[in-house]
Length: 177
Ligand SMILES: Cc1cc2nc3c(=O)[nH]c(=O)nc-3n(C[C@H](O)[C@H](O)[C@H](O)COP(=O)(O)O)c2cc1C
Image (cartoon, rainbow, N blue to C red; front, side, top):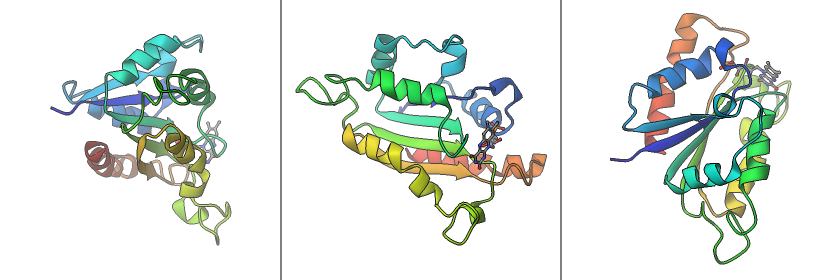
């Protein structure tokens, strides 16, 4: 059976609503999903690079999940990219490209409404454009990028009903990675 690695970076997971809902659902299916919570595993923010690389090597389907903070990922995920995607492992030599052909995707919770992430909206750029650095990073390391799932508008509507409505499309997306 396919087992997907989900690497979640949330600086304030205790108070999370959306990401917690998603992760709690995945945790019901441990044979299908392995959840790696970076802030939980590394509360001091210091990564064990070799361990992270070994973990990645064990999976062909990987989802990176985070809440959208300041139009970007939370800093520990950037630290992860900088630290783990090393020369000779992720790229740049014959022994490299260890993530080559692995299916990778993003799952992002977004506070602002989708309509603001349009050329006519307040923030002008689409999420696809704002997430382009991740897409090109995956391209650089020859991973097989499957796109992203985003749930928008939590700041406007954080009702139980709205948050719950994010779960089915999230699960469908994750299953397809
Ligand atoms: C420090 C910080 C920065 C944020 N920056 C953005 C942002 O740039 N764009 C946006 O749409 N939402 C932004 N938000 C809202 C979060 O994306 C939103 O609260 C989060 O995705 C909700 O998920 P959670 O319930 O798992 O925490 C920000 C929130 C915080 C705390």
